[in-house]
Length: 141
Length: 141
DNA sequence: ATTGAAAATTACATTTG
DNA sequence: CAAATGTAATTTTCAAT
Picture 1 (cartoon, rainbow over the protein chains, first blue to last red):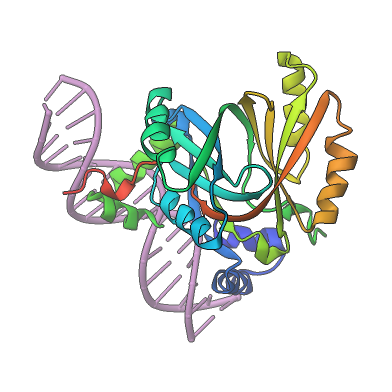
Picture 2: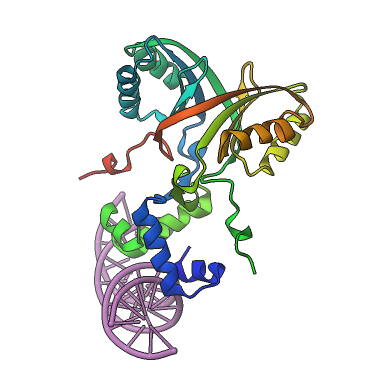
């Protein structure tokens, strides 16, 4: 969206609107801008949510695991959970074989990994970024 | 990123670069563009992964549940899984109380919902969009 | 609001496979 | 010969004064 279009929606003129956006960027509210792509269209038809349990939950070991998965391109998201599984990983692969290879050669053989439970994503009906606020519903005249 | 900058990275001039991008958009490879924001900075400090089991897995009932969660702003992602849990929902809320309210008044009381297991996300160390391909590493001269 | 600059888009000539 | 690219010119749009 262009700045003028954004200003129109916000009900203000362009210059202060741009200043606000810059302020949000500088303050860290806006992390960046991305294009959304269709994984299936690029041959990445397999999405798996891997529930990972670790042997040690010491902070240093948790951090080490986070750093490790951060280097794996197959892992698109890594969330540390409270509960029976320590980490929830979103893994994207071209096919099931390539996921299985990732699972056996990287994930299960990684240090500190106790058990992995793979849940194949059949389909994703909703994938929204951001927070529940509907921007168009805020400050509407 | 502007088109000229993208063309520079691709090693071609601007017009054919723009044509390629539009071809990707028209073909559905690129779904759209958006800004990435920081949920914590906006007061949404609670992220929960809700594992939902349904009573009926008939296609009509699955679709009905997908449509329903699609109307709930608290649900940012909805993935249908193969395994013991039918759906994995990523839910974002301002605090634990507001999540609990969502859980008790919306999710657990929704039609066809059998059981819900909530896994609180302590922290997210990786959140990447797209696929494992590193674009900058492709076709590099 | 105005102005200056940069980018997007079109048309056309050229090259490449 | 067809498809894609590059150059150039035009129109539009954006951002700073």
